[in-house]
Length: 221
Image (cartoon, rainbow, N blue to C red; front, side):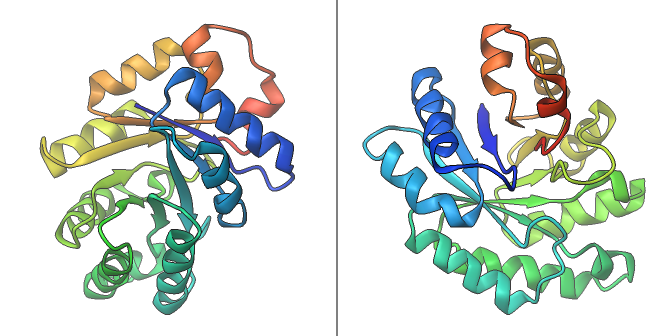
């Protein structure tokens, strides 16, 4: 249920390879890396059940739809099997739901059947906006709604995950990401309705080992 994540902008090739090896060791669902590292992750993970996940329109979601579509196609060509896209918050807050829907639907079509997760950035939305965003993502054919990029003012909350699960029902995936650093926290999010956990502290979660505070709270997905 864990997407083992390394989106820190200073990540090196050896660090990308390390998270891929860790994902194979612990049977994580996916490794989530920036688009520039998709081909490397795909090479390291080849032959394993671990999926390669990358970000689209990250972290603000304000790229044009055409840019997000191109980015999605490029990521898939390089070996990505799951895409985590950021919706356009400005469109949503402007009340232009049709434009938000088209943005997501275009990426859905470009994703060629790959898993698509839509990042809502819940810390920047009110309750009504969160519900609308979930419903739009569901209508667009996304596979998951996701709480956070981990690059905003705060990450996942149990309240938001419960609301997202209540809104999308039992069949759509809900990914909790941002600040989840322990097994107990991960279990609480699963109980609240999450079906996927995004974290850069994945190894600490499954092994119960200590993590470096600065690393865990910065660039956390």
